[in-house]
View 1 (cartoon, rainbow, N blue to C red):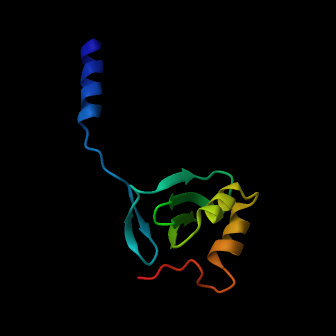
View 2 (view 1 turned 180 degrees about the vertical axis):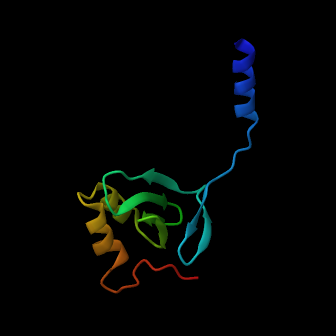
Length: 107
């Protein structure tokens, strides 16, 4: 029993640490090592939200597809996470802004 537990522990410690990547619509693979990600279970539209505070970059998984938004202020991210309806907030304030390109990422 002790040998099995030791072997399991050693295999976990020796396992390579890899960061997660996701396929972002229109961008390709994005490495999530600098993002803080949260799985969302209180929305029928939004499944996951990842935010990189240093780059002000937001990734949102909507119905299985990731979308990237740039220059998103921390205040907007916080309001999004606290919104009573994340789908409504996302559609109204992030996806379809007044200018239509407020958080569009420039290549």
